[in-house]
Length: 418
Ligand code: HOZ
Image 1 (cartoon, rainbow, N blue to C red):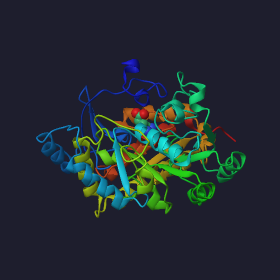
Image 2: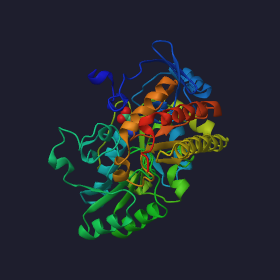
Image 3: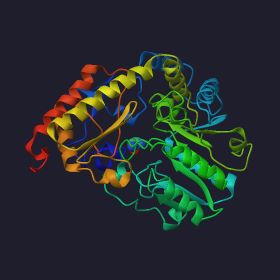
Image 4: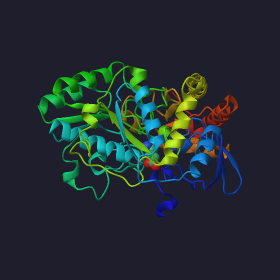
């Protein structure tokens, strides 16, 4: 396994040390192969909003295991999950299930190009929409962590139609549409950026993207792989009141099993084969196990107090990290939306990728080592969001904060005199 990992974000190249090898997980805890227990703020990069192995998901999976794991036919649970997604997301009338977020964004993009008859697409610097060729330009997540400009092996032609603009600048989008009239098929955006670290949208930014795309006859695609059912039950589109044309989903809707989906109005979605002429397929799409887990997670989230609890935990973590950095005199921008958070060390404010890149990655590596020593597993990159689950307790939050306080006391992290 190159780097000892199955996905580059799991490597610890940016923070030093070896990536943990995990033997088991329960609630908000991971147990490594040496038997040590850690508090987990990675949560598999987002899916485990209820923590690892919540009883309703375990029970649903057990039930489904006895009924079969892949049919090659539509299953009842697909219909059940599709109904729940369409009821929750204002932008969803029909859903196509796939097996990963990458497939979701890649397919939504193909649909947008087909529906508009245009080729250009706008993405934002530091945003990551999976590893499809066309979207691997100025990407965040592991690409940012490793400091790569893009990926070797992506032909220039594959990204020639991808326009990369700064996130949170509506004027840059207006200018791009003016410069390329009738040529832009879609704007794809993480409505809360999570792959350059957590960066919330500026007030009015998403609404402006909606207005500009609609006026130009282009589609607005929300990549809600990370934010869907995490920042609110109806995703960021509900939280910010902006309805996209297409929504990409993953992570929470599969309860930790491999899943992805894209959704939109019937008139768009029926352009997909077999009803339409846009082709996309998958042997294990709509996996009954992933569907069972997804239905169990959404039914647990709906109507309960999960988001209230997540907000309370998130604000405790945000306040703790912010107070610690203020007390230590160390600049640190703590960005948070609900249960997604990033503490950017060495900078006062982060609104876009350029600002995120100015953060002090060496200071982050030292803090990360302190977290590891305290039994806290945090994403091993300044350019990832940490996640909370309903299984975390205030004491788990306090453990992360107190290790952070300790790390800030190390001389190298103190602000220079004067
Ligand atoms: N969006 C996820 C983290 N930024 C992807 C996880 C992965 O690449 O393994």
